Length: 301
Image (tube, rainbow, N blue to C red; front, side, top):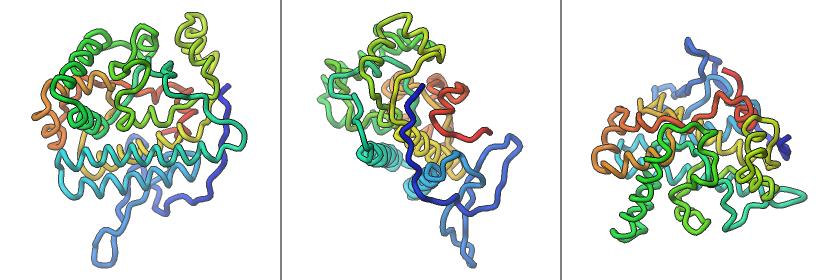
């Protein structure tokens, strides 16, 4: 079983009337003053069982709305992606520092978790591509993009189970280290392990990998950073969908980056206009997996 190191953070549920749509989903509620001026957001109902996660989600929604309320521009979307990344790391790192007994086994050069499907949002994709574009020379960027395209050709359409393979490393992995560590996805920032040997077995040993994928075994970890990432992602998703009419269904990292790299001028503008240029990159959504739902702490919808 996953080692649950939770410590409840004091907090309260957002004060708002409970409301569901026809599908039973939660939505954002805009609070206004007597003159009708918006003064804040609230959740129509809890997204998560833990109060602190709902507070994190609501904070992320407010932040996302603040960025895009200044304009649906690529610059604002990139800034939102970077802000969500930094916020996730700040929360996750703070939770890990509060551990009373042991530290995560994760270290530089330990890349067992970098051989699987990674779910991302459009702002994350835009922020990652901007990081690649601004930190690499044109020649270096082209090498990276060619590696990315080759990986996408090989993995497009694979299931999450098929993607967990020692033969399918993340195309952004360089000598067993993340080459975009400063701009890594939210999911990567929440992932952690207390047993690197277990991660290695699940990746390299077929029997161990099959047991892991079947839910018969799990890697011991601190659960709170994982739940923090889910809370931030959910808040950003709600704001983009409810308040800005943008497409927010989860994307698979490699496929989404390839789509953006192949048309970096048009794709961002189409997404910011409410279109769905990343449709072919649908994936990275494990919400139907009961084990992932348990880890995330989400309420049933």
